[in-house]
Image 1 (cartoon, rainbow, N blue to C red):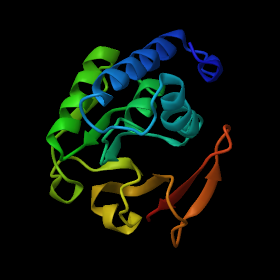
Image 2 (cartoon, one colour):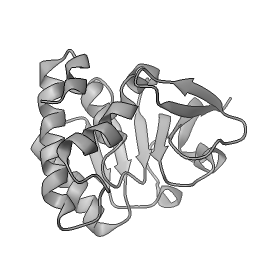
Image 3 (cartoon, rainbow, N blue to C red):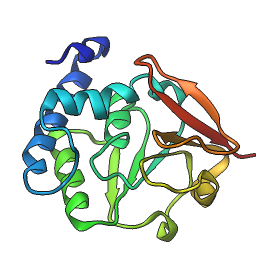
Length: 177
């Protein structure tokens, strides 16, 4: 158990995030999911910077380019009351995400092997992405009216507000009317 997980008061969420880290370590030997070489480094890179963002979510969430599962799987674990759709077009990463969902035992996630510009499902209240490099405006078709895009990491973007999270990380939010 990592010290940062102690800030997560829900024991079930902590156990699921531990299982996520275990799965990530197993799969990282086969496919490039993260540069983090230990579970502690993966926690510090993929989980800790996300903590607190769950309070910004409502309704349904689409995570674009889900890759290694951050932020989508972390947020889904912390918000089991919401529905999450993870979009990942690359087959090996899609397979990892499906295995991680199974290993974590989370039931509020659907993993689809498709790109955001081909998504034909229901719009979401929130769209998240990390290290994808898309302009938030390009994701507007995925959003329900009054929806917001949350961007984790990356360079500053135009027309976004910066929100600082408890671990000192920041995200950028752009809402559409």
